[in-house]
Image 1 (cartoon, rainbow, N blue to C red):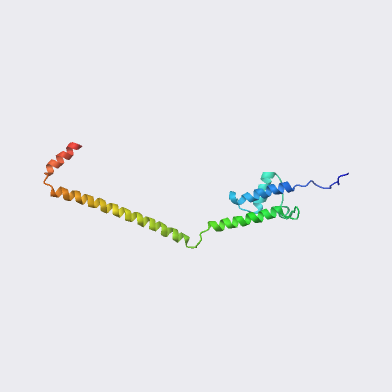
Image 2 (image 1 turned 30 degrees about the vertical axis):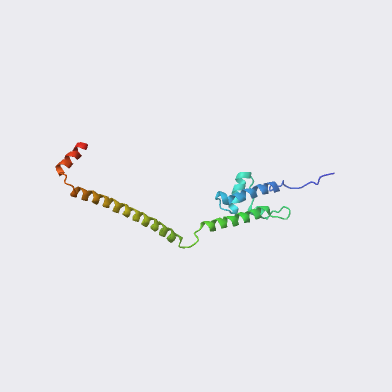
Length: 148
């Protein structure tokens, strides 16, 4: 029951490490990190302490599957969809936004005009009441000065 002796250097990129790198790559779009091989290499070196190159990351297979390459492609596609969803649906979206803002401001102007007309009507009514009354102005001013 002798174990076969492996010659050479110890394997750096194990399947366990590859799965952890895949999980890290899956989080890139949600974290706002651009999905590029440079970022994958830099983040894996920072998190796991192993400086592996792009070829090793993208080409290494376990059970006939390139785990890291598949995770990278999935994350890249998700990032593309997120960017596409964030872009305006129409090229004239800024115009539509401005038209909406103009409509809001016009409604505010109309509301303020109505308020101004109501205040103007109230003041005219007060003035009309004052002009039609037979109160002496000197009495009115003396009463107003007494209140202050």
